[in-house]
Structure formats: structure tokens, C-alpha cells
Image (tube, rainbow, N blue to C red; front, top):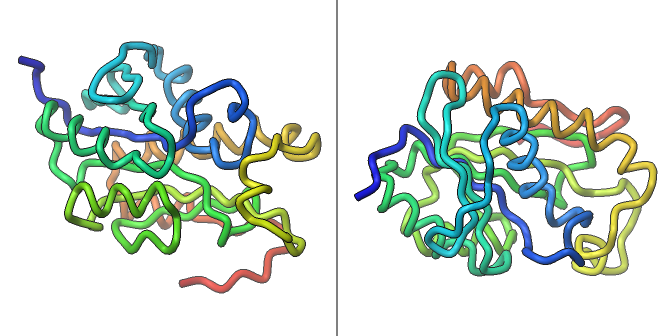
Length: 201
């Protein structure tokens, strides 16, 4: 039997090379950056996900990327939380959010799925929405004929140039959250994209 973990960190995305560099995979990319920064390999198939186990900010963590496609992510979350005895308030979900401009980051201790299919699956499978999440802005700042088409298309060059610093920022936010808690992480790392008129919730 696997020993318990202190935290389960779940990056949401779609498996397969065709989705690697799309906005909908910002959660996967953030999980990968956390793995690199903390010398964890996300490579072992486990509970419908690819998993890596290691330490972040002094805590034992399971880093996971569900392999079921976005709208079925909840199954992996439920299985992993049970297997590693992680309570729902120690599950941190990283995902793209089309309601926020690119480069915005919003940490919350809980909340609704707000139309995000991956989060709908998690809330349904876990029977709770009381888990921390790190929302990574994915809106380009201009009207979109189809949000779905945009999220599943490769990122433009301008975004790719900013991606490295954004992923480092998100990874630092998660490391701080694990060390100091959600409330302090919200105060320090919640940010709006430059030039955004976005209203605080």
C-alpha cells in the first residue's frame, strides 16, 4: 500500500502531442514546471494519470497529470486522493481559465467550476468544490468566435515568449501555498494581467 502524501497537486490538460502547446494545457505545463523546479519526474502511470512523487517546500507531494482528457479529469483526482490519503482541502488544481486574461493568476481556497469542463468533472467526482485551485488566465484580450477552438489551438508566438516567466510564477505560487497556506498565497501571488480591466471577485 502506498504511503500517504501531504498534498496532491493536479495539473489539468489533454494528453497527446497535438495538445502540448495549447492554452488548454496550461495546467499540465505548470505541473511540469513544478516538477523540474523540485526534481520530480512525472512519468509513472497511476490511477488514470501520470504521477511523480517527491518533496515541495518540505512536504511530501504527489504531482499528477490526468490522462483521461480534460472533461474526465475527476476520476483520476478521486482515485489518487483515496490512494494517497489526501483530504480534499489538500488537493491543489492548476488549470487554464478563459475568464481571466493571459498572465493573470488567481488562487482560491474553493469555488464553483464556473463552466470549466475539467473542474466540473472534479467537483462531480469528489462530491465537493472545497479544494484550492490556481487559475491561470487564458483569454487573449480580444473577442473570440469560439473559445473552444482558441483553447485547443497552438499558442501564438507572443504567448510562448511570455510563457517561461508565467510558469515560473505559478510554480512559485504553489510552492508558497504549500509552505504558508492558501490565504497567504492569495495575498502574495494573485495578480491581474497588465492593462486588464478585470474586476476582483
